[in-house]
Image (cartoon, rainbow, N blue to C red; front, top):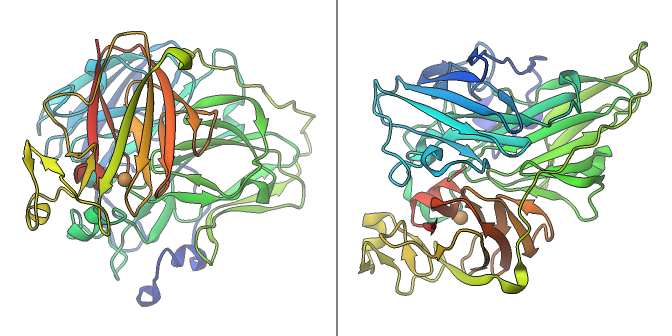
Length: 463
Ligand code: C2O
Ligand code: CU
């Protein structure tokens, strides 16, 4: 292994020894819509087949965990069995779920202790691309592999399985032997800067997997960014792809991206429409550094039996339209972080100073407060439109996620789109609006998981 020369994600580009391994789905379905997810230790050769094994934590001995697939409007029951040595929970990211099933340890449920189990029982109101992940010390548990895709099918058949591919994208931090670095989890440097960034990119657990597609047939590619803190930039126009959905919510019509590249923030999803052309193999690349890095490679060949296939339309979800004129405006200021403004940050009711930032590891704040407080950031009446204007006064970008609701972006990145996580760049402002129609206590936090743990977490309630 030539690992001594490994640099920032670089071997993704040069590793030729990757096999054509389709995403192996391990069956999670017990019966009907009942599933079982067993969280346990899992040894896995992340760097290459037959290579040194990393100590992952995973669901059903697979990272990503098994794809859970259900239909819009259905009820689903998932039994989480905790065979880890640590407490855990599961959060169903992007699902407008009943509050007591949201899986946030310390806010909506007690963590599931080692040797115990918990049954998540909920209905899925929206079709689209979602995911599930641990929500107890997520910065540690997601980094070690506790996540998987959750796909909700539309009421009517759209893309069949052969034309519907899920790509779960993760960046792992490997050491020089090609083994997942566990000691550096929780490093102050990551918590106060850009979060934990990996150096090894995988799709469904494999570096630069190869897919074969048929020419002239429409495909839906569901990209899910499960990285702890890395935004992944891709250029869909570079392989003639259109955008079909963001964070599970279908566009009216597939659209070419007018700006580029497309940045997929941590936890965000994008569904792409690709109609590959004969003789035009293509590669989805990460384009944020000076050297493009392959994410996944696609070879295209003609299928002799193929007949003309229309592009299936994706039906819309029934999201409540915010009443922006009469909405209540909440302003949120993000502060703190390396090279940032620490003025007056309060943690557990006490103003932090000097070394206390290091001792508590609380470096970030929302409206001057680090981490969850006793009192909610705001309290909404059920049915009220809430407008949140978030100003980023830090030296880093952030990816802010709201639980239990989807929102419309009024201004800022992805203006006009529905999302569950929004991007707010340095010194910029993003404004969103949503109908607070889901009763309960909901988190509002940065989905760069180190930032969330280091203070950039808050919550609101709907009563
Ligand atoms: Cu994807 Cu609070 O989480
Ligand atoms: Cu952040």
